[in-house]
Length: 374
Image (cartoon, rainbow, N blue to C red; front, side, top):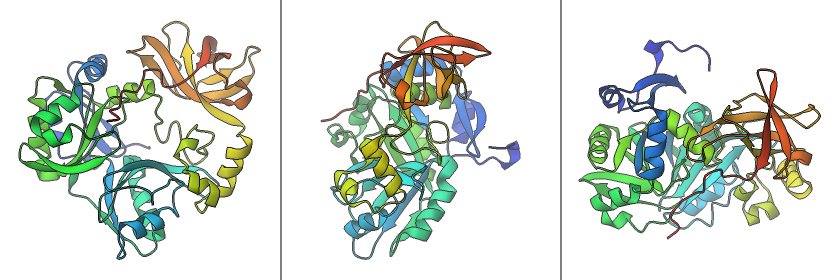
C-alpha cells in the first residue's frame, strides 16, 4: 500500500465516534479505520459470534447503475464485465460476483443488487477507484452514479436480526442475499441481509449525515458492541471467505480460488465475460493449483506468505491468510497448493521461521455459516 502519512488519510463519517469509543485507528485502503476498541479483538470476535458486532465499512465503494431501458438492460450490460448471472435477479435479490480480466484473473469481488429501477453495487475500498473507472469505461449505454454521500454499517451476529426487527419489524423475514428500503428509528436506510463474517446480519447503507445517529441508535441496544477490522478479519477467515489482495487477485482465477459457484449456468454455456476462455477451460479440465483450508497442530499460526511444503519438504504452495481462530480454538489458514495436494486429509507443513509446522488440508468454512435462508 506504500507509506501513508496521517494527514493524507481519508476518514469515514464515524471517525469521531470511533475515537470517542477508544478505537485504535490504523491506515487501511487509504482510510483511518478502527482495528479494535478497548476490549480487544478476541472480545469483539466473541461478541459477534454470540451476540452482535457493529462494523464501520463506509470505506467501501457504493454505486448505482442505470440504463434508459431499465434494470434488465443494465444487468445485461453488467454481465459483459462479470461471470455472474445477473439478468435472472428478481427485485431485491443480491449476487456476489467478480470483475475478471482478459487472462481470467480477478480484478475485484463485489455485490450487485437488483434495486428495482437500477443496480446497486458495492466494491472493495482498495479497488474502488479502478473499479469505478472500469465500469465507467465499459458499461455500454449505462449511467454510473458513485454514492459519495453514503456510509455503510454492518451489524453481524446471531442477535443482529432481533435488534433490527425491534426497530424495523418488516426486516425480520428478509432472507440472506436480499435487500430492501426501510427506516431504523426514523432514519431511512437501504439494507442488505448479508455480511462477511459467516454470521447472520445486515449491511446498512445510510446517508453520511445520518450515519453517526444510526450507529449510536444500534450501539444503544444491549446486544450490540462496536467491532473493528481485526475481528472482521478473524471472523471472515474462520468463515473461509476471501480477502481481495490476499486470497484473490489479478493472478488468481475463480476456479483456482474455489469460486466456480459464482459462474452462472447460462454464463458457463454462453461465455461472454472477460477471461471466459481460460476460466471455462479450467472449469472443464481443472486448474493447476487450488485454494484450500489448513488446520495447524498446536497454537502457533502460519501467516500470509508462509510457504506450504509436502511431507518431503518440497514447496507446494503459499499461505494467503492465517491466524488464530478463536471460535474453533485452532490455528487456521487458507492458501494455494498444487491441486494434487488439495484433497482434505492431506498432511502438509507450513514454514514459520524455518520450521515446518504440521498441518492438514481441511474443508472450509472452519466455523459453520449461519445465514438466515428464510
